[in-house]
Image (cartoon, rainbow, N blue to C red; front, side, top):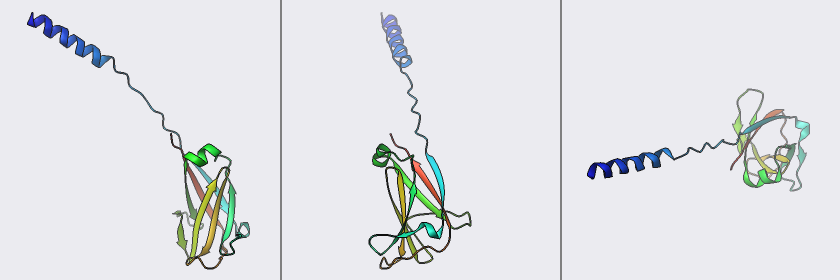
Length: 131
């Protein structure tokens, strides 16, 4: 009787283990976009203390703007990207985003005066998708 009970228990355990299914979750792919900003792309912001440069990013929909994440980095033609917010050569860079748009801002490091960037920069925008 013990042998039969042992065999039945082992069989039940084997069936319960083999009935498990694996779930594969496909991660959402991140997207990286590039843009180049010239000094003429910057305009004085309404606060009078910073310059702004809007970049159209059609990949940012309303849902992504609400639930996704964005990382912005800049490079001054040397191939080295620095993630912003960042202070570079006395200019403080920051950004905001909403559906369809990323806007970069430049101002003095202490935030009191507007400083227009004087050289072109490459901008790398990484869209980090979430579930």
